[in-house]
Amino acid sequence: DFSMNYGWYDAQSRDSKLGRCGRAFIPMVLAYHSATRAADKTALKGAIEEAVRQFLEAQNNDGSWPVGKVRYRLDRDYYYWAINKDTGTSAKLVACMAMAYPIFKDSHASLAANMLNAAEDGWDYIVANNTESDFLMNRDPATNVTGQTNFQWIGSAVDVLAAAVEMA
Image (cartoon, rainbow, N blue to C red; front, top):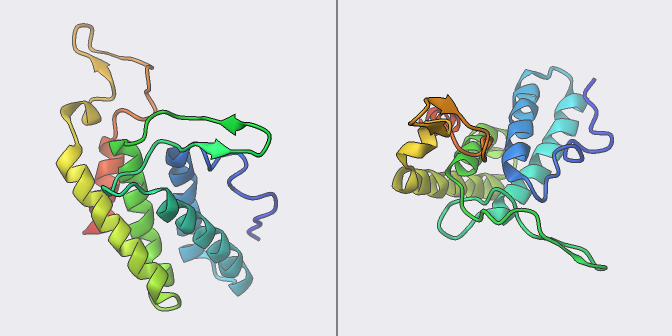
């Protein structure tokens, strides 16, 4: 059985860390495609749609996605990440949109069209804005050692490859 009890996003801090949400989203889509029980597909589809809407809302006008976004509370402001455009996160979410597109293309055509447009805009951003450092895993050229500074977000070769495969 698949359960969405307590929400998949609690541990992923979905409002502030979109890249991590993308990483959690991919197994949900794969689980949906492999599920054999209608109840499991229904539970997963609802959670996937919720995430898709979150991803669509967070996309920047230039097609990129931020690492995270500002989340507000009534009693105070929370500010999580200052990185508003990130190639790795954008690649991850392009792959997510393209992977989930078949789930909605027949049952929710307008959402599917928005997802496809978002993925295409995101792909255009990646192609126009990737740099050599996006593929080097933050490797220090002097020592050839992989550093930990911003390690999760730099070194997006795997995410760019996933986006390319899903967009093909």
